[in-house]
Length: 221
Ligand SMILES: O=C(O)COP(=O)(O)O
Ligand SMILES: [Mg+2]
Image 1 (tube, rainbow, N blue to C red):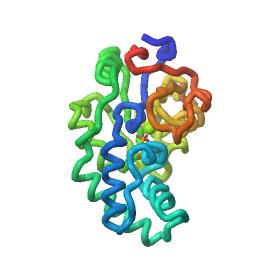
Image 2: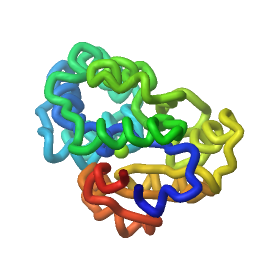
Image 3: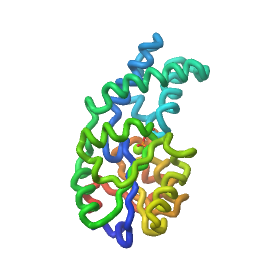
Image 4: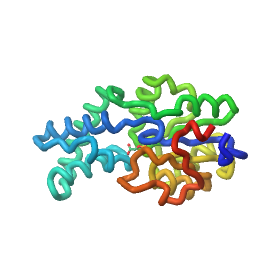
């Protein structure tokens, strides 16, 4: 086990860019929503840099890029509604687990750790994705971007999870791919671990000052 796990009893995982490479399906749904509104597709490589602040912000960024200016709130609302419809139809068509994820979750659970999922993705998509990969049983609690009044980078979801299981934040670890995960983890008093292969707005996540970085979750266990 990685030394960062010493004394850890609860591990919180980010989803998009940490456990799953979901951008192909997110991009397909973004592009389908733009197409519904008569706008040009943006493509996977652009969408990759826009993921991380929840689905509404993702859509706002896509519209801004397509229009060259901020879209009005009504257009954002319509595009978001279309995005949710398309993504719900195909959340796991091209989404893949990253290497070492299954092994890491099984090992940590086997060692008696409590695993929680803290994503900024809308809550409704968590179960279909975890069930598709047969990982749902590993998580004792799952929180989405709309589960509580604030989401990452706010520490609230992490603080909520630690309190829910009566575990001190000093015995908790946040594992994620973005600066929002690191900021939330730090603000909650969790230890932080970054993976460099996910989505961080095109910047290296190591620059966010995580307590550790692993190339794959296999390295964690
Ligand atoms: O949907 C998003 O914005 C990103 O979700 P994540 O928090 O699982 O990376
Ligand atoms: Mg992420």
